[in-house]
Length: 445
Image 1 (cartoon, rainbow, N blue to C red):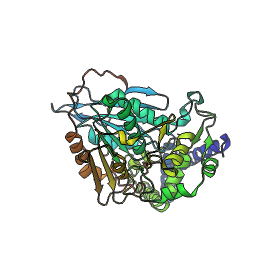
Image 2 (cartoon, helix red, strand yellow; image 1 turned 30 degrees about the vertical axis):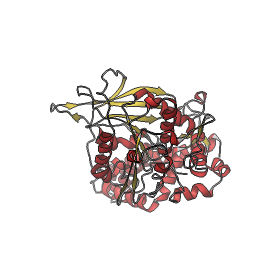
Image 3 (cartoon, rainbow, N blue to C red; image 1 turned 90 degrees about the horizontal axis):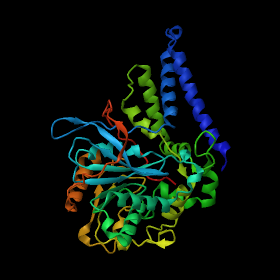
Image 4 (cartoon, rainbow, N blue to C red; image 1 turned 120 degrees about the vertical axis):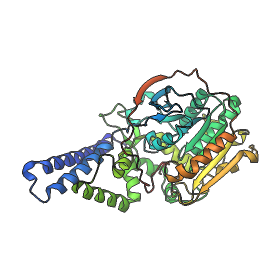
């Protein structure tokens, strides 16, 4: 499948369905059709179909609402690039006119088929109390082949550079897929530049040891060979995008696997939305659209990143065995001796099941017991532990408490003047949030 034909075929199918939806919506809206009993249903089907397929190739906006300061005034939130790299940027959610917060938090976003905007609600929940920074990964289809490769080692080195750029008065929260690589990046800093280490590291639902508690994801990774995976999953970007010729694991292929895991649930959700639209009860920012506008927006991963994740993190368990290497150099997680580490798991997490992330604590042989912490959230699924009700009501307060207990940072720096790239000052018109089933923030294999 490693050719442009299959990549362009998927894009053609997506584009055709978007066109069919737009056409049906237009036909159902004609005045001459208004008397026909099927007209509202045709229009509703077209509306839902066109919106769904059009969202698949659009990066969602951050849409961060204004923040009310201690002075009672609303402050806009500016999205600013601090470090720009070919495969991802380090961005800062700056709140002008507000005193910088002492808590400085780097959210390491997953590169698993969705954009970093998957963490929008996580960012919103932290902004009142923290200076928030996020790793904003780029869509591989838009990166020219001339920029070279990007695999798990490159990802790790990006994290090292981002953490060094932010300084030691930093607290890192790695969510899902990047947890093992963030642990490795921290170990590199511990050995090379101890003064650049973060003060705390929180690992949320990540596959540190995928075999600790097997799931469908890990079972699939063990059953398929790398040759089969490369032949069946890797495609070549077509001429439509700047990354023409680059080998990728396509976001559309990833999305099909996401949906197939819970096909019945998704089918019922779309049927219900069509019924609501036909009755005139659907809204532009209702619960369904808020969720699926994000869920359906997928990005391509470089082939080398996807394949190396499967082979080295899941199959060979290099992090779990403390046998990971970067540029031929061993990374010893036991070198971490002063970074406080907390692991958070969800009792009902069927992507990174309980035990997979907890394995990190056993690898930290040089870290004192009092610097280790763990939390298992009862009844929480994968999405809930970083953006759902469980995060808001229970986990977020615990993480902030953990940060404060391990924070002896100097006053927040006021000299940072990153370039302003964009301003998102329009709050979402609906704050309602569905509790989705199996929202995949970790790398499926």
